[in-house]
Each structure stands twice: as C-alpha cells, then as structure tokens.
Length: 466
Image (cartoon, rainbow, N blue to C red; front, side, top):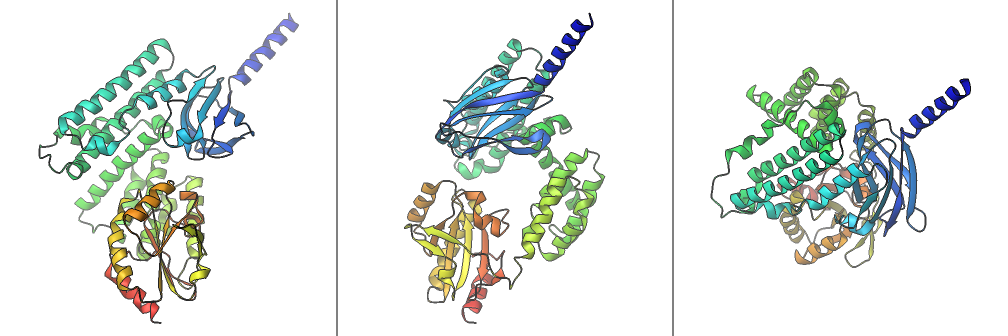
C-alpha cells in the first residue's frame, strides 16, 4: 500500500512538472536571424530561447505556470502564440515571408496548439492589411468592410469556443482585443479620412467618435496580457489627464504642465502597472524636451515609476545623453551610400556635418525633405556636408525614394534599422533626428533644429564661417 501511494505521488509530481512547461520546436526556412526569442508581455520578459541549427530547426523548453499570450520572434518575423502549460507546439514558417507579413504558409501543430492556431487563422483572415486604402473608402463602404471583417473574426472565435470549452479567459481577452482594434479603425477614420479622401464631404457618423467610450479601461489582467489593450488604456488616461490640465488653463508643454501631469498620475486610482506605463510614456519625450522640463522628469520620475526595467533604461539613457553634450567628440559613423560606396565621418572632417536620421515610412521625416533640399541648394558652396542616414528596414523602399525625390547630399543606409549603430550611439527614441557637428568633429547639438526652422540655416552658416 505504501509502495502504491509512493508511486502514485511520483506520477502526480511528474504530471505537475510537465504541466508547468511548454515545448516549442520546429523549422524555419530562410530565417531572418539565427536565434529565436520569446516575448511574454504579462511577465515583461524578452529572452532568447533557442539557436537555429544549420538546417533551420530549433527546440526549446520553457517554464510557464498559466496560459499567456506571447510573440515568437526571428529577426523581424514574428508569430503570435497562446502558450498553454503542458503544450508541445511544432511551428514551421518561412522567415522572409513572415517578415513581409505573409502568414498563409505558417503551420502550428501539436498538443495544445488549438488556441495558437486560432490566432494564426485570425491573422490570415484579416483582410484590412492596407489601412490607408480602407480609410480612403466612402463611409458606407468603410463600415461594410470593417463590420464584415469583425463579424468573420467573431465567428471564428465562437466556433473555437464551442469546440474548445474551458478557455473562457482566453476568449474574453480575444473579444476585448478585437473591440479595441475596431475602435482604432474608427478613430483613424475620424482622424485621417478627410486627408485620404478629400472629395468625400459626407459627415462622419457620431458613433465612430464615441465607440472607444464603450470599452472598459479597468481590465488589468488584459492590460498585462494584451499589448494593444494596454496602449488603448494608456491613451485613454493620457487624453483625460491632458484635457484636465488644459481645463485648468495651464500652458501646454510647459514645466508647470509636466509637474501637474506627474501629480495627477501619482493620485490615479489604478494599479501601479498602469502608472508605470503612463510614466514611461512621459519619459519617452525626454530627449526632445527643454532643460526646464528635463530637470523635472529627472527629479520626479521615481514618484510615478517603480518598474525596474523602465527606471534602469532611463538611467542608461541619461548616461548616454551625458556623453552627447555640446563640445563632446561626436560618435563616428561609416555607411554605404546609394552607389554602394563607403562614407565615414572621418572622410568629412574639416566640414560642418548636418545629419538627418530618417526613414521612408516616417511622415514627419518626409515633410522635412523639401526644406532640407532647399537649404542644401542655398548652402552648396559652404563647407557643409548634408548627410541623410536611413534607418529603413526595407532597403529597396529607400533606394526608390532617393531616386524619385532626387535626394542630394550624402544618402547613406544604416543596416539593422532600429538596432543600427547611429540609433544606439545617439540614443535616438524617435525620428526625424537632426545632428550638428562642427569642423573638428565635435558635437554642436545632438538634437538639432529641423531644416524647416530658419535658425538651422543661420547656425550652419555661422559654423561654416568659424
């Protein structure tokens, strides 16, 4: 009897152990990287879990105590999964296809793969990939398109629910996510339809403007699990906070405004995880702020942020920016130009260097191009090197725009887009970013004014003549 009890106990322990792990294996053809990383928003982890073998196969076992949404990442290719304890998933995809957004040939099989397969099927069923085209539709066609798509996805969720009982939390989160995505489309239609379809003069339905208000902002489990819902909640709180401060008639973007924003975040009746995200978003503008606001952020950020990952990142940023003060030796660069020729900062020493870090997908970047071209023409006889460094992830898109827009100066391409050296060296958090370097290779301003600002031309002439 004792032996039987012992054996049963061992089996139960083994079963519990197995149910707290998940095995991920498979093969990637045309991989975008030689490693597999896994991002789990709920636990705020982003870890390398496997290295690809020469034939593209991989295998990893991870500990997990409850179901969580996750992203399996290979370079710029990503796949959304629902990780269920005890699952054994086999995943196959083409890295180049998935990187470009095509997931039709992806397969997810194995024990516990049903919910991840649903996520994949929903991704492939979403026909609204060209958002600009959808937002350009007349109102009636837009409504028909987004409603039809929402109904299709809702039906897929219902069918999964009926054949896979016991997934109530997963289903609830999926439905919440779909509602947020629909709200986004309505919001974008309100904001951009007139620009994309200027000949459509029909009024936009009022319900588009109020649909977001029907979504609760207090599902904190979903907040930790679903990135798009987290962004929605942060947007809603940010909007309410800013409107409150405006009603108090405090000057926008002033030091007093930022102080009041921090005061309100501190007193919000929400979990700390929400305050962390609100505070981290506030810090995201740090590099673009005047010193008066930077000082407030440095002094008070720990009052609203306790997340160690965020506080550490901000500390690292401050250390980086300290090295980018005026008069410091500018970080060097070496990139190939549009003709494949290497251009380095050392090659341009003796000239004033004005750098534009940009990308073809960046609207504000493209808005500066006419001003930059005009300034280049007016100052072409000065000792000034105009250097545009693209951080596009699509090199052909960059090459096409350089040709079509007849861009002048030094047109350089930085590999690895947002992980490129220029981004890291200058602690860039958003583009366009303009950088001014003097003839001796010293920084004048690591966050210089844009070409559209008249002061930029004046400063460049002053430096060129010094």
